[in-house]
Image (cartoon, rainbow, N blue to C red; front, side, top):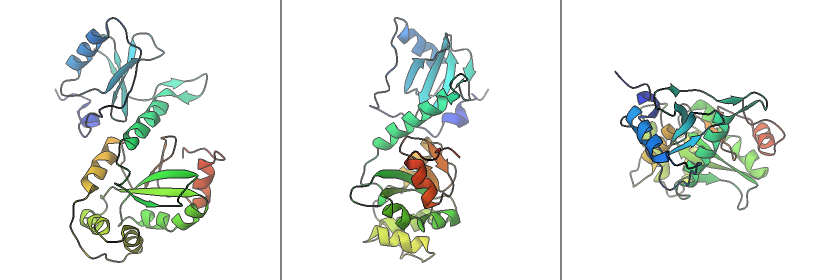
Length: 243
């Protein structure tokens, strides 16, 4: 039988050195062994107890699920603390997203922003995406508000999206090429060593499904187009980041 985690975890790779600590116990190795047996082919990053006795959190990349101590029962979905009105699962996902993004080479992105931004967001984009193009029109206003936009590519809209992204990355002036591409101009095709496949894999790892997808500073996700004033207010804590 196909394991239910197959589609959930197949695109992910192990993230090394993230320091995802959990409360160790005397039978920790035994627990990990049972989980490994119940999840064949899945390389787990971390296991740690939850507030529910006998239920353990299992993470792979930025994905979170839950497993019983004997490895028999698996739960997929959010664990919610009703008294606080808070999803413990989403809070954990946010931590994991930030850890994954911190591991990304800072030179592997196209950044629009002031030298000393007050806030920085990471945006998964496709140059052929209409809403991405509309978002890019907001970037100057965001920069004026002290918000830097760090673009990474998630080419899914058109057959040419990967090569169009490659043309932007390989241009002498990437920022100018990005702006021209987002305005609908065809950037001269050019090939070079580039991180676009890495960007796409990173997006899959973080659960990105569409563009634009904005990763906020706290690791929360805001999918879709957002006006500059609204996004800046979210970053300043004046509005909730979640849609």
